[in-house]
Image (tube, rainbow, N blue to C red; front, side, top):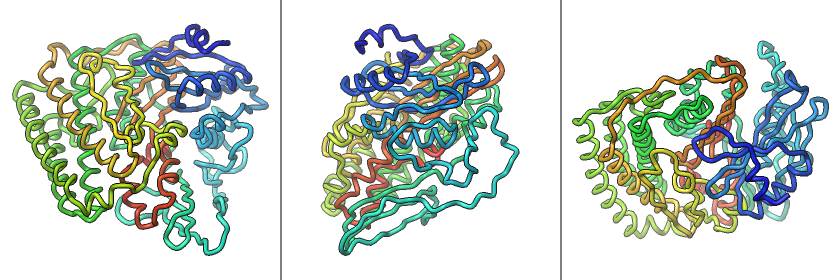
Length: 514
């Protein structure tokens, strides 16, 4: 069946971007994935549902990102034999997603890596917490079993384990280096230490309550997650926020992007030996957060996006302060960019370090700023613009070298572009309400929200059970796609470069572990 026919005949899914869903059998699951791969699609996310109380089956879903649309495949699995064909051959990121889906739901992909990913073997065999009949009141005292890292053998090869507990306040993750001398031959990461049971927690909430939990999936992306959740809920209820609310949401999202990029640019300078950069960018970030607190009542805008709109409005005086801030920030960041670009010591550490070739990034489905630093022009705000980005279109920022220097330049470029967008959003801020009541959701309705956060596209898939209960809410962070790529970026580098390379990706542990 040609891809075009399937895409055209797919069932439209309520979402803030074009999404179509197709129910397929095992053969179509594989063959269509092949066609999507040939068409240049990326695997956006993969997840499962327990439908046994309805029809005795499980479902596994795979969402593919194409230019201008998302295609979701749904494959129904027999409740007594929930096995489906692996997509890892064409989409490498599927392997960890399939491992995670098995840990949580017990549906298994045939072939590929079958090691546990999220549960760390501390749950009993055949205990799957996302099954609807899982008894969450039972506690388990199963001691963790050793993880089978892939061994690297050879003369002079030795291993360096790093983590899961690290210096400072970063989140937990284990990194196993196989090295000769200090040259890295292989890096294998193990994550899952920050698993919080968020997907199960969603099932205890009413649909209008879930945005607050979504904002806390990964705190540095609170606006992206809460907007994605609200977009899913608003889509399935058939409502749209007012133009003013949409503009204020985008303003909040761009401020979140600016704040995180400023923090990263300072940290990257510091990791490369320029403490001056950390000091200067920390000042700029702190000023932005304090202005957030003054105007929005929150430094990190954790609860600013709400179903139907935003929590608070801004007045003319606030608009003036925000516009003045964009002018000051643009001047300061331009000056610091010049310093970074002309500092020979800094450039010596940045250039050629942690290189991710465009072909490798493409093959592994890199997303977000990591992709854009390796020549992949992927940005959902541009390829699938939703309100207000259809009225205030962003300009793409692209680098092709794929090294730390490229990821630094993408951040500089995106700060300047977000400042430009912020000015436009403020100057074109339409009148009207900032929040609209949400209609009651229908039972068994599904909505999808996709928001291009500062790391990349954040995805929320929301399904109601009754109008007042959530049956399932799947959240996906773009870090899933980009964590495996650090392992490639480290090859041939030396162990002391890991903090710099890791920071240049700055991926979410919490958002990944969920």
